[in-house]
Length: 492
Image (tube, rainbow, N blue to C red; front, side, top):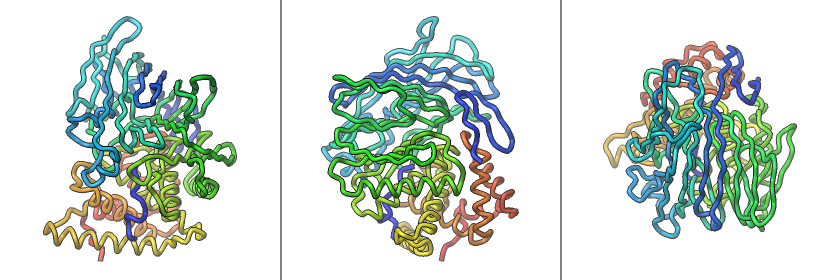
C-alpha cells in the first residue's frame, strides 16, 4: 500500500510452480489463471495499446455465467465519482494542473468469435464479459481483450511525470469471486490501496522508445534493441503486474543468493549505492524474519509519486519527493516488507487494509530495532507513534466532537487521509507492538512466520490471521484483536 513519508508521522517458504499453488502446512493445489499482455507504448509514452489474452480458471465453487474485470484506469476520468487523489494532495499530484486518463475497451473475443460485454460497476469501473456457456468449477475459459489506455499527467500509480512513466493497475484484471458474496467490485479510492486480486502467471511483451529504460514485475527473458526496445517478461505466481519507464534511470544491482536486488535512481544522484545497501539489508532481514523470497528479482524504483511509496510484486515505487534520507530509507524498508504482506500473503485491501498495512508498518519497526545503524530506535518509533496518535485523537475530538478510532473498516469509511493513516498505520502497528510485548518476541516471530507459511500465494481473511496467531502464540487473541480493530482500546 502507499506509504506516507515518516516525517508525516511524528513520531518455509512455499514451493513455486508455474501453474500450481502449493500451500505449506495444509497442502492445497490450485491452478491459477494466466495473463498474456502485448503492450505497445506511444512514441511520447503518454498512452498505450495492448492485446490481453487470459486463460481464466474458475476456482470458485459455483458455475459462472460471466467474468468481471476491474478497469482501474477509469478512476482517472474527468467525471469519475471517486477521485484517486484527495483534495489535500491534488496540487502535488497534478503539478501542471488537471489532467485526465481512461481505458477504452476496443473488443472482447474468444477463438469462436466476439463476446458480448458491457462497462458497468458504480462508475464505469467494471468490465462484464458474458460467457457463451456456463463455466463450471475448475474449468478454464480463454478470451482476449483489445484496449487502449490514455495516461494522465499525474504523479500516481498510473500516470506520467517529468521523470517517470508509471504503469500500474493499467489492464483489465479479474475481480476476485468471493464465496457467498459474488464479485468484489470496489471503487478506486484516494485512501489506501483499493485492490484485491488473486495470484496469476504473466507473460508480457512491451514495446517502447529506445530512449527509455524499463523496470518491471518479473524477469526479462529477452530484450530486443533497435529504434524501439522490445522486452519479453515472465512473472509467475504474482498478484498483479506493473512497470515503470524513464529516460533518467541510473541502475545499480546486487545479487543476494539467487535473487537480484536492483535500485533505480536518477542520473546524478549521490545516494544510489546507499539506497541499494538499505534495500539489500531490508530484503535479507525479511527473508530471515518471515520466510524465503520465491522470485528472482526485486526492483526498488525512484519515481514521480505523490505518496511516499507503493508496492507491487517484485517492484516498489519510492517517491522522489522524499527529501530526507531517513524518510527515504524508511519508505524503502516499508515497501520491501510489503513483498511478504500483500505480495505473497494477499488480502482484501479495500475492506481490511490493516491486514497488510498494520503488519507491514510493525515489520518496518522491527527492521530498525535490529538495524541500529540508521538511528531509528524501536522504542522511539513506538513512543512517537503513540504521541502522534494521541494528538490526532485530541485534535479531531476538539474539532468534530468525536472521532472514529476503529481500524477495521472499508476505505470509504475513513473521512480523511490523516484519519486513515493514523488508524491503520499508526494504531495498527501499535496493536502488533503491544501484542509482541504481551506474548514475547519469540512467539510473535513464530506467529508471523506461520502466517506467511500457511497463506503464501493466497488471500487470507482477518479470521485466518487471528486463528494463525492464536495457534502460534498459544494465546486466545480474538478479544485482543477485536478490541483494537473495533476502536474500543483507548491509548493514553
